Image (tube, rainbow, N blue to C red; front, top):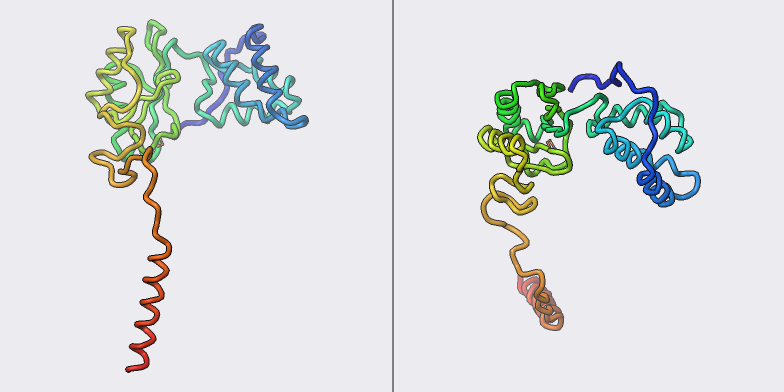
Length: 229
Ligand code: FES
């Protein structure tokens, strides 16, 4: 992952939409007085949803709204790869290349993106439709390799399934998110080896009196064996 810097070309100003201003009031109200800085990530997220990337004027405004030094907001925006620091296409294909995804074949997923889109990380297709981004752990390692497209996660990908996914994105008809190999949630490949009983059924009651008697019998047998030794 290369260094993350703000884009050189920045707009002159940023204002939240009226709808976002209402949401911001509710977000900030969730935190105790004096801790409004905790709202920095949700506010950066709203700024990004509004303009598809996080601009310097947006960072300045958020710092002012939350009573934080600008550098603190900058630290958050530049640390998390979920925040785009320069303009992106309408569709941002974010490929995780961190350890779990790399071990499970993210190199093949990246190659499929490069071959199908004709662009590398940090680039956007000439029509401005799709940006290819490299991201750090997307938090879905158990279903690696993982690609996030907007808010949706596509998992268990390989060269072929990633290529097909790009075709569907290009046609404007992406499939439902989730595992490309049919895994439910984060269950293991193949059959489950634990949590196999029906969770809606009450577990059988343990016979505590019988367990106590069994323990006492064992103690008595051990005592006798010691006496006869
Ligand atoms: S390493 Fe890719 S999701 Fe965690």
